[in-house]
Image: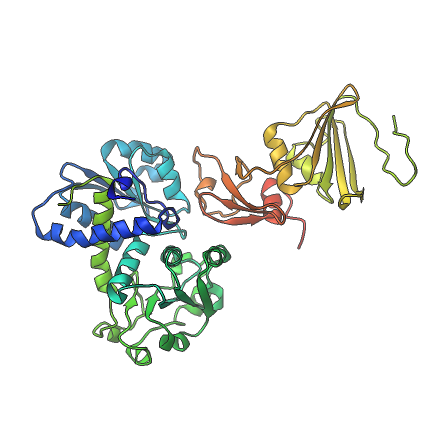
Length: 312
Length: 166
């Protein structure tokens, strides 16, 4: 496996990536800070189309910043109401139009499987920026990159994944990506109504990953090397009353973290509501804003690898 | 004309031209007819046996349809809900072709995905595609949204019935 194997490749699902692919992506990401500081423009003349049919701040801006840092340019749809989707245009038609304007498309779409469909119809590579409640592979990549920077390795480590495990697509992608490493132990912490889906548990069992489902956050804090918090997403609940019942169930505070093994990293894909209290922000545990910077590096790495940018 | 047999064997009357689907899973015959779009009102001559004794499986259904031969995708549909079924093609009272249905590893074109948020349920030109994860008990997984469907889900999606078990 080499950098060249990424040329023209789409990133639709974490499941499409091998361990070797991950190593190449992270090695490339390590080189990106130097590109930011220099005047190098490896993707000069290339265009990224950011097709965001669902609300996004971080992911879209992160992709756009990544492309600009590499010397490329960006065209954007950030509000689905302004696009022809409101006229009833199909995703496949949208893709077959937009591919004429760019060299690569980053897409976020509310329906599951949308990125896979886009990749089947598109002549340019597709980067999945989030497909419904299904997957968010670039988020998982930056989450893992962050964990590796903080912990040096994830092998043999215990990680708590907390909150909305049922609808949280970042959880799904992260669980899959961690399953490519040895001896990772996962603690799934959630209210019973938000437990992780059976399909994912089956895949984890097949990959030989040890995991435990628990309801109490305070119980797992002393046991783990890292905590991944997620927002309990109101928009994923069919009824608001159901959301109201669970929204305050899992809040991480500075006081709770005093029971941790040490300055264990706390990650969050953001946006947060109240699940990490502000008093955690000034502690050594708070890694979530650093995570966002890592997101730019990882997305730069993907763009550069897929569009064949030189790195000297 | 009825086959001569002793009273403990099933009496099977022969058809001149058409298809006999044997070893349909017990209780599935009506669903097979629905899947094939046969209501009777279009004039199709068909015979059903339901929950009759089978040496192989204990109980089975049999569906006989005159003057109709099944398309490949119809046979695959039947395989989804009756993986042990046998298709007998009859011409001039003789079985000219007999084969077991076989569930392919990938099912293309049906059923509708049970996940309402799947892209395949939107107005797109691509066809539904499923990977067969296990044959018995049936489990298929949508290639696009990764949702699993069991036999009950498949029956629900293929027909207007609400499924066979509560």
